[in-house]
Amino acid sequence: MTHVTPPPCEDVPGLGPAPGPAPGAAAGRRRPVPGEISAGRPPELLRLAGGISLHRRSAAYASALNAAVRSDLEHLRPWLEWAAQAPTLAQTTELTAAGAAAWDAGTDFIYLVGLDAEPGSVIGSFGLHGRIGPGALEIGYWVGSKHGGRGIATTAAGALTGAALALPGVGRVEIRCDQANAASAAVPRKLGFRLDRIADAVVRAPGETGRQLVWVKEG
Image (cartoon, rainbow, N blue to C red):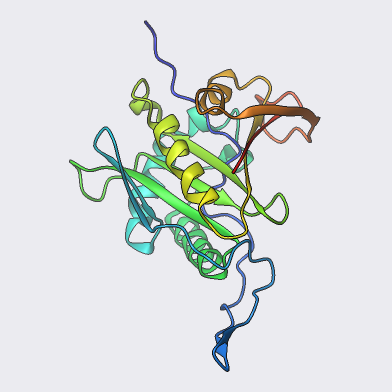
């Protein structure tokens, strides 16, 4: 049987606005942060079956992430606009800093997936993105093409679904991918997401059709 690594599903590793520092507590009460999805935060480390882990993206992994992306650009380009050009290490480092600020502000939670047997390795990126409105998070992901056939995307997306729905104020998780991206669509289907709708979308990458599948799971 030929295994196909799920193509990336609407993920931009660490990309997004870099919000300012989260306001501190005042008079014992926590002030709301503009754009914050939840007052809680997901675990920074998730150890998963199959010898893999999801961990909060940090500057320590910028070089490994940059190398992983650059080595897999042909796999990423059909589905991700940002993969049109190879990122420099400086760009990856800058986006890592933006992702760290977004985590602290509670607007996006970016993870890297690595092999437990190879400390420091990066074989993909996953994110919980607060770009679809209040009370909801969108899961985006990509897994390196050399690591197909192991169910990594499904395992990691399942763990993040549970982590997202455990956050206070979050009642919905979505996974979105282009209609042509059949391998990525298999992930939410296996996890019991329902296909909520097929929406028109701007075509931003060569493999896209402009028809976006919107998969939903509610807590």
